[in-house]
Image (cartoon, one colour):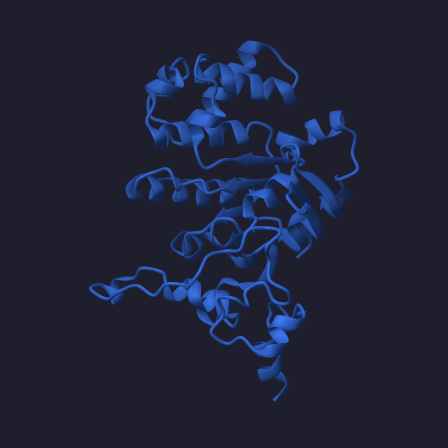
Length: 325
């Protein structure tokens, strides 16, 4: 299956006390049409910065230092700013964790969707409003004609997220980047939004890059999973491989800490320590200070990715050692 999105060697830096530090450091990703790739890890691992870097939306003083991003076979990292604005929304769109921050509080939500449509499509305002109504109905907003004239504060969190999804779909993008799209919602509404994303993906054939720390959401929605730690991808594979046969100690620790019905009444496992601050990453493997399987070599140099199957890789000396024996 051909890739609609390919990311190679992506590196994004921010200034720190010791100079500029790459908080995203050599990230490789690929995403096929109609596929969902989940990028997972704890807060502070670089997931959201990766997403913003792909769309060239990194806030200053952040800076993309290296890497290639191809969308539909076309390199987009070197595009002029005006052309990149056309790519966003038309070919790749993004929805964020908190829908309130994506909506203008003093403009009716229908008008905001109409504006998004007219940025990418020619036609009258009336035609754009009719299209906005169609989008509201597609994302299952009840009483859609009345909701078009509502202000953001008049809508619930779930309805606001549906409006944001409608805006993201306004120009039929090939790729949807969803950055923690359900974290701010309660469990019932979260399930509805996940089901909506599944339905829209089936209808439109979109690829979805899902940014999340919630492995339950990953299990519901993802086809493939990339696990990120301290700016690097440490394990990647199909959902069955990464969630069912995790090999990297970090992935294993994340899964042990995941709540489950079978663990009810038990104390949840925890990963000792915290994700190191960029610029304070340890020498060698960046997980070495928290890893139960750390060896001397882990503190001396960074491991390369070990291929476990045609679709499964892990960046770990212990895994490589097991494979070699």
